[in-house]
Length: 420
Ligand code: PGA
Ligand code: ZN
Image 1 (cartoon, rainbow, N blue to C red):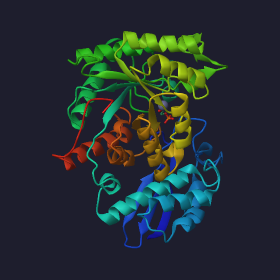
Image 2: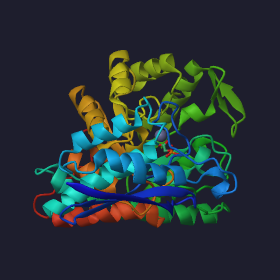
Image 3: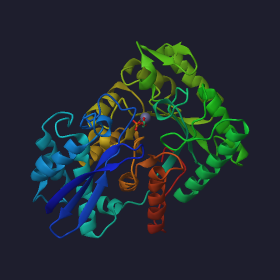
Image 4: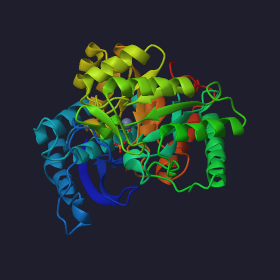
């Protein structure tokens, strides 16, 4: 049973405060979880509670969320069986009482939820992925970030994320190796062309590109120069995060200096697919442009993975609506968009039943916490997006997955295939 719940403020990868929660059980087992934070958040996300006191952390402090853990949330779960995750999460949701967890904070609630699961796993003497799924064996194919733009970098690039999927890899470790090799080739070619090689929030390079074409040319060339066939060995994935540049019913590309109506924007994305070996586009359309989402899915959904992030916000009901409406064919899963482990797993189930693919995901603000690596294996979701192969907040997840693959030696499964 849960005996003690504590929380503290720690720092995330952007230097902002975030919440870390410790759950201790009566048998002394300890679970600890730190909560991530997004920059290009969806409108329908569960609400992250920030103090708003300008004298502390420029208003971003989470002291209130910490107090909510120590007070009402601890009171709600004390004495509950940590193995009954559904009951614990239901108690947290009831204690908050709001529809979007704004009263006590989704960050406070998620911290308790994940720390409870980790305490229960520790009590069972199992790693989290094994505690959650006795048959867990499947390692995810990583979508590895290599160029940052949008809200994640200070360059003029409109699209937020350019990633590579090492589809020729035969093991998870091999995928990371291919990713690292291409990353370093790209660094050299950027430097040679006179671009800066500083990295953005997710560890990908952030040169002063103004167009997606420029980034995609460099990436395709870097794949080839590393000795891999673009599209056959290593493919490209995009997250334009289109909600961020959707204004007044159109897509305003500030870097390029053009505005595209939704139909023109869909044409533009289709054109990129013809010119470059792109296999997945996340948030190609804005969260409010549902007609656009349907148009994009009708046009490209049969051949291309279309991942809904802002449009679904990891919410099972929103996803179910999207499935009915024919938006996207995959869902991005971010634990802090919904705020409990139980709700996260329910969204994964909803996607599976509809044949939608599932991509486990980090946030742009992360910590050394590696829970999502275990969740990717526990759910066997097949794909993970957790940033570049640089910056410890990103590599912590890759390194955790490398260790899990070793732990599962002989039984681990991996395919360099988005569809498996
Ligand atoms: P965020 O971005 O964590 O800054 O919201 C990640 C994404 O859009 O996928
Ligand atoms: Zn996204």
